[in-house]
Image 1 (cartoon, one colour):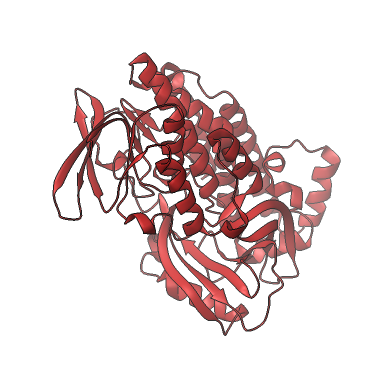
Image 2 (cartoon, helix red, strand yellow):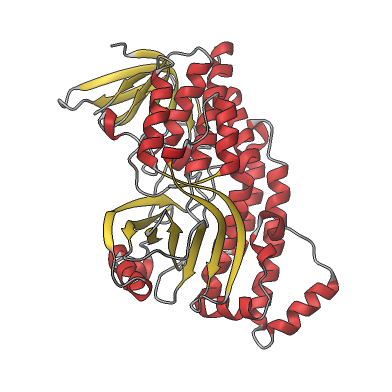
Length: 449
């Protein structure tokens, strides 16, 4: 077994395995490391939802088949944002699938292995190898507790929210890269797959059910996952007054209101990133993808699609850098540019929407939807940055009476999203312009928060 390759990838989740396929398609030698045994790879908590558009794009980019029938638990057509009174809601198109993560993940792994990717399973990466101000590989421990070095021209950190490479870099290494992981960066979540005694009415639906007693972002989710089956869960940041709250107990208190009796098929907890994407996710010799780079949607925590896209781009950019024999930030910068274009800009806007919904709360959200102040179009990327006529704004003012403070909040949000969208469209093509751009976008978030 070789310890040296063109690319070493930490984590065989969607970001890691797509990066492996992408790099191998470009004739690079790849080592893929994961803590799980081979047969358990792909068995993950959360991330079952995958948009049809993304799955088709990934299939084309990686030259693989889209999700097959046996890999799809259910199809999705609509996302429903419901208030405490479920009849008061907003419905949005959301075409996609509920994926069986294990079966689909195993198939992607087989696709990688068929391209001669070398899998090292049952192996825990503990830190990066840094020499001459460049990441040159990783140090890992095998299941026998033996320490091994894996060296590569490019290292891809796809290790999930814990970001084992990014967070263990020397403090003075690549100053423009965010290397921390604080409680403000992620939410703890708990998810169950349940079976009901009778069939449900949520087929082809994703429901975000807002509740007063659930900490921000304030909802329990219900995803139709097949006949009599639902994917249910909640999550929140365990900071401030929520630090001692049990996510599992909050979930149980909420779900009993809707489904007091059910059979548990699977129930597990995990953490998911809740920040905007890392605008810079590269350093000398290093590319960061998926949850390790905060690539999940801040509103829905859907990270499967973004991870697949990010991994695919990472493999492509790794090839370009290796061809040049140049591994500095300038030669990896194209990764950041493409991530922003693919989904980073949208996710940056959705972070503002999360903040808005957090401030509004369940009670005022119900008021705004009932009065027609918040409409279906407002919760889309286009709606977050649209320009309204004076007559449309006047109508909202009238409907918002007497809670004008909510309208002021919405106006500030609209202004912030327009500025963020404009800045994302002007994302720097080179690293040289990055720090100035970063200061501008961080100032918008700071003013809004």
